[in-house]
Length: 428
Image (cartoon, one colour):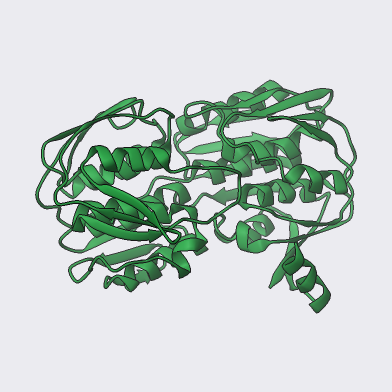
């Protein structure tokens, strides 16, 4: 087990290349199950979630090879093998195996998913969709059992706008008989990315990126080659780091329109942000103004950037209020920021940030992926050295993190935890 050490106060300058979208990759890899011939996915981020999904596909008989940023998946020998335990419990996105295996084999047994603990994230909307398509769904000994004689297209209204449920129902519906209509569908770019892959495989999907998606079921899907969109959350994280400590940071391989909400808030703070075709250039400002943030479904401000942005607001003038409407428990980073000297308190679903608190390096722990990003932002701003444990969370979503930060001028490195630190981690 390792910890990440950051010597704060270093100015960031230079360029950083953004990787393929983590939130697309974890859906696109299971989607390959639906094909009857090989699928090649390009621009894959080198993160632990991708490696876990590759192992899960191998468990059900798939042949998976990885070369740099490319994965080839041969699904011809896959079977509906139950996956009740083990790796499937280590990542939230394992639930996409439900829709893909149900669509392909008309049955699946998947352990309840794990991943970051962000409070209740029920999969009731996923199950509602599967049942509408004709599946029988039961919870037996901590695993979800899905069974169907056949899947029949249906009209499905999502009570809550859910990216996961929208994608999962798409995966199950593309090989169902007849038409499926998903109303109140999520609009995230990652949904368009999945729909693009499925369409290249032969699926008939209209309306991805709007709140109504129409799917005409087909009998077979073929393999194809697909390149993943850039990771807007990784890009937003580096924009926040650049706003905090940047002199001039160029962020390459982005789709600027995917970043409109974060760009607007950074400019409101006084940060200079320049957009180009596939680049963002951010120049940090010493005299930043506090702003209020409210997370919303896309195209609103993303919940995945709430935590790192909270760290940035610690350095801004005045009081800022950060409200997360998506996840109840997404303020676990606040206690760690307070260890570093931040003046932040949580009231209900909001964090109140009193800015201009000087941060000091401290020993802190990442409780989840984006909390880890928040602590890295804080560590870059802090005086002295910040030690961050819980790197298994950070490694789920940020490729080549230390290398990218060092290329920008940060002083950052990893060290092994000693026995006492490992015992503290195990007790937490």
